[in-house]
Amino acid sequence: MAIVIAALLPVFLLIVLGFVLKRSLMRLETQWHGLERLTYYVLLPALLIQTLVKADLILAAITMPIAIALVA
Image (cartoon, rainbow, N blue to C red; front, top):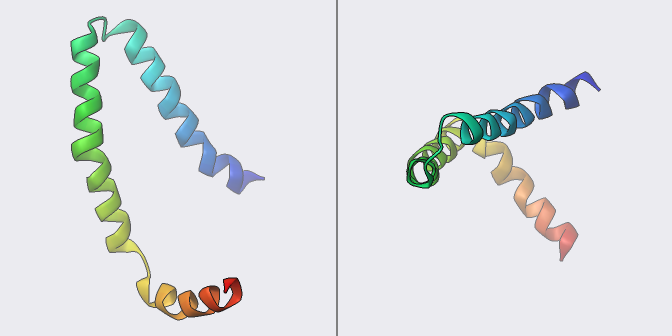
């Protein structure tokens, strides 16, 4: 149970942070639009690249043929 909470808590905290920022600091729609574009085009790809760099792709290469054989 603690593992699930530890995994979900940062997600919910980011949602709450976004809600608070939208309501308090970012009154203009243009500010929010710029922040959305920054997140979508810069920060999300950086996060994906960082996650792929840290991933253990050898294990994925070994288990992928097994998963395909089970599905097919």
